[in-house]
Length: 395
RNA sequence: UCCGCGAUAGCUCAAUGGUAGAGCAUUCGGCUGUUAACCGAAGGGUUGUAAGUUCGAGUCUUACUCGCGGAGCCA
Image (cartoon, rainbow, N blue to C red):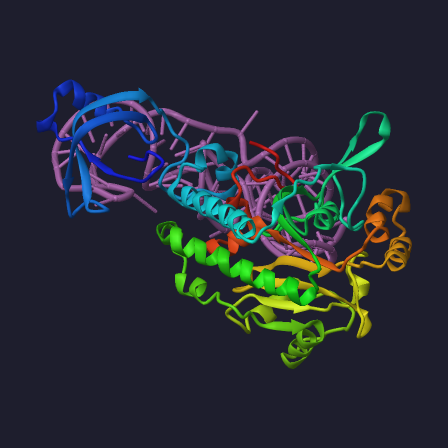
């Protein structure tokens, strides 16, 4: 029996019930819903040590030929039946962990005087220009897009409220067919006035530690269902290793891998680096060339951006991307022009530098990637109730 | 967009170029302190689509469709 709070074994003994009740019990196929009256007994043979000895059984909803059997199934079949797959023990455990991660995210920021700040989902501009956007016609105003990040709006919020965070769905029409991509995924993006890159990294580190500890504290049973090696999560404590991009390149070189300064780290590179540590690794100060226009340059080396990527352990890859933002009006305008972005759309964004600009920083954490890592599972499609992927938008 | 792999019963998979099978599920019968129960029986197929090679194609060839993994890009 499953009721949403847990599982209980229930026994219907021929000798303890009427023949009518026994007949009803015989009709209870997999996933039928029913009401049972009985006596709870201690029973060492039952999982959990207790079972319900039924005296009466009432059928509520029959379930004929339930498609998902206790045997093995393929991925396509299971996702076609996602609405039913969610009932299985493993999926229930993942959804409970998702809830815990989301709750711990809100608690973390709420307890540190951040204000939840909701950016629009429909936007007229591309925040980074590179990614593909979901496009729509917006009445008489031309094209509009589904947001791929609330960051630019969060910056406006930070200048109004000091410390803010956004938390909601974001959309990317990237044609990525991998176990790390969804077209609709959730992101949390804190943005803080007067934070420099070091402050930003300190916060990210404390944040990740908090989330993992919260799951360990409340979801041990769920992690057990997933057969997660908990000892790996117990090691997630500050401080996390911090490497500059140059340090990372050196590690790759020492490992005998061909590297070229100025190129972004590939997935294989990230795995090599993260496998050298048992904690998340923070890689900072990438070449500005390969990073977004809004990132501030390192005053000590203008070729570098004041940015950070956090790589999850065990090869789970990037879960956080963040930076200190460019706060100088002229420099930011220059970047927008260099990237050939429509200046008109960014007028409001430039205003943030025109009227009382302050140094500020922030980062974005991908919810599903984080859950995938914490759960120790191999595909992020299981971490959201109804995944949206390049070749699937049903059920 | 590119590279690789795949598509056979409701599901998971077998089948040297030679009569398309098993386990599970379903139905029927039996048995049972089970927890992926067990024993017996039955039904269930245009082998993704189209063309080609061949005496003969699930198997070989070509194209297409769909799916999976990866690269790039990203959280």
